[in-house]
Image (cartoon, rainbow, N blue to C red; front, side, top):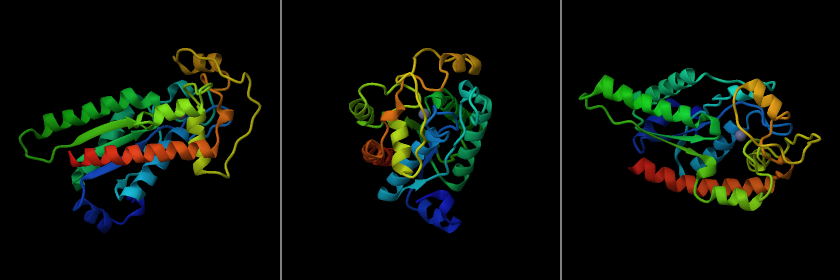
Length: 248
Ligand SMILES: [Zn+2]
């Protein structure tokens, strides 16, 4: 069940059975020469929607622009400043909370978002403490999880791609989009086969260090078959974890 594909009476009815929702969250940023700009938003969306369909829980619209300043040297990347993202996430949460949602599970697809998501959740709890202490309002609880940290998924990534998984534009994440969109396949001559590794600072420095946008990866290994295995593993783990979170 997806919030944006539902009517308000359907959401009203859902709230009588559950106060919990999953919100996929990611970014719109370059993913090397053959990865989609939407990869980090699409991966959690694909996993969350399938889990929601299988287990009957609600999936919110995807928060699809995040912390991508270091990718701004590549065309098409869109970024929020941390303060903008914290404000926007807080408005999403307050909107859902007003309707009665009490458990927000943010399924994240972008490592660069982690610190800001954490700050946003802290900020939401500040709002409760400062604004409504003693008002007997329902408690808001959030959790965030990176999809590759769902139980068993990281191990499966390593098993599928023992060499060249890397940390950006990875064959694992590109496999997931290839599985979900089998007709979309980008091709390019990639050199070197495995991209360099190193630190991340500003956008111009990033482009000099990582000329085609990849970090440590060989995404030409990606395949729809690998993507299906990863999604299946992630969906199982997400259903278990979300159900426990919703019930807590
Ligand atoms: Zn990514």
